[in-house]
Amino acid sequence: MKIAVLPGDGIGTEIIAEAVKVLRVLDLSFELETAPVGGAAYEAAGHPLPESTLALAKAADAVLFGAVGDWKYDKLERRLRPEQAILGLRKELGLFANFRPAICYEQLTHASSLKPELVAGLDILIIRELTGDIYFGQPRGRRTAVDGHFPGSEEAFDTMRYSRPEIERIAHVAFQAARKRNKKVTSVDKANVLETFQFWKDVVTEVHAQYPDVELEHMYVDNAAMQLVKAPKKFDVVVTGNMFGDILSDEAAMLTGSIGMLPSASLNAANQGLYEPSHGSAPDIAGKGIANPLATILSAAMMLKFSLNQPEAAARIEAAVQSVLAQGLRTADIWSEGTRKVSTVEMGDAVVAAIAAGTTMT
Ligand code: IPM
Ligand code: MN
Image (tube, rainbow, N blue to C red; front, side, top):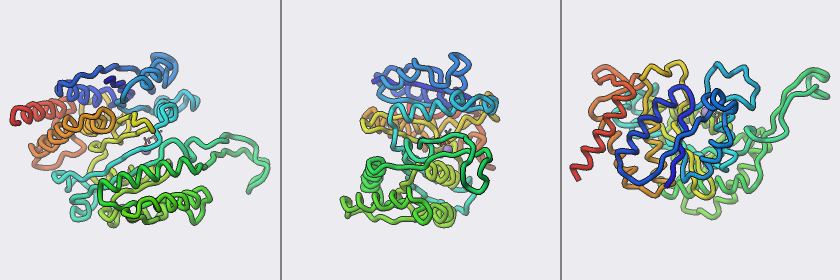
């Protein structure tokens, strides 16, 4: 088993170091190989996704990814910006299915910006289509408008599009995931306005015929944004396109108290996956040793489960995370009165210790 480790920028290096520490203590036989990505790769090799990094990712059984991006690269031409690294990896590896769970840990119920009773026990799964939609649709660019409200003026445009197979495969992923959970899928669209999403809705409805045991509901994206803060526990699996999924997954993450707790997985048809925290590179707190490594540590657990066929090892990590929370250890983002504030490294050490303690108990 080979794991490509791509720390990236900002807090990426700090949180990945903790996840790697946790993976090593599990004593499984895998090879870890690190490569630069994002702004770090631009500095080192002149490109956010160098050929060698891409080749390593393609050859690996799984990719463990930190985060990319820094304001200092905002002025670079788009193809050289750090974000192009993650977009390029998604596209080149065909990682079309993005799993973003939003789970509210019991001990963190009070860290949510919503009332505790709205989020206690929350466990929803956002499945975001990741290689299509307006993110990748062609054509896109800038030109002189020939029509519209201001013909003759400068304009910019992107293209929202989805093909039938793209919608079908993500719909299958969602229905199959729902079968293992509470058997309900909410498909989020904007069919009342956009042709792309009327088509999305039609195709999801067709695929649903193969899953009579799963309940399907359709919801407009504006209403979904509202329902997520009104009654989030009514959702089970939410499936949606790339852009709506980007927005709704950040919203859902915040319900749980901290985006610093949430892992994510992006899978292709061969179950090869890229695993990354749901949060970004947070350049404002980079280098301070205060970032929460738990989202990345939990992403490593997802990797063990989904791509490396090591569900027991994943369960040991998850139990250890529960244990450090129960011990009252908190990084700054989830700290509250009466709990103990710890650094990134201390949190990683605590997870390692909890795994070791768990091993001796069994
Ligand atoms: C995410 C991020 C990315 C996205 C950016 C960094 C390109 O926001 O993974 O959600 O928009 O998909
Ligand atoms: Mn995002």
